[in-house]
Amino acid sequence: MKQYVIGVIVSNVTGVLSRVSGMFTRRGFNIDCLTVGETESAGFSRITVAFHGDDEVKERILKQLEKLHDVKEVEILDKHETVIRELLLLKVRNSPSTRQDIMAAVEIFRSKIVDYSTTALVCELTGETSKIDAFIELMKTYGIMEMCRTGMVAIERGENCLKTR
Image (cartoon, rainbow, N blue to C red; front, top):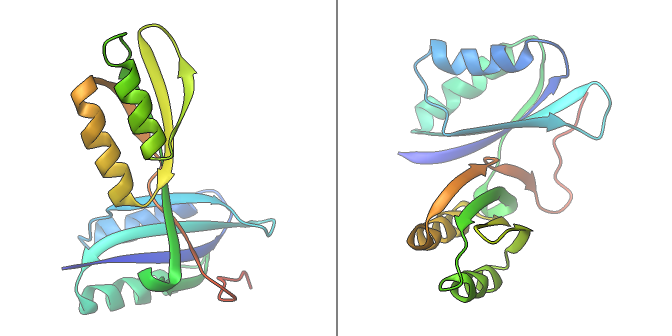
């Protein structure tokens, strides 16, 4: 099964996210990742959805999304022509014996420490999912206290754009 990433432009109205996510649920499709935020145009939001499936599943999802009233545009985003990023905030235990190792890892991953106390560090990292996963795996050694991820956001490279109508 292949992972697909879809960009969806929707009207920024109450209940639209529920209708979009409900479409997946009603048809038994699992969402790997879903993010939503306002666009550059007032009155519209952009939803990024990632899911696994074959070509038939992809086509069914596209057709069903296009039928929803508040959906203005739907597009499969080609991973080779798209910038895809996630944000991670991760709180890890801070002790004198591990501090230098953690700070070295933060530097190598081009992360940054956004909060510091004698007992915990909060690291911020943006990047592709594989980079985020690798950083989390490394930080497990030092004791992850808490973490949150945004899920992926995606935008096409170059002139290609999802536009509001």
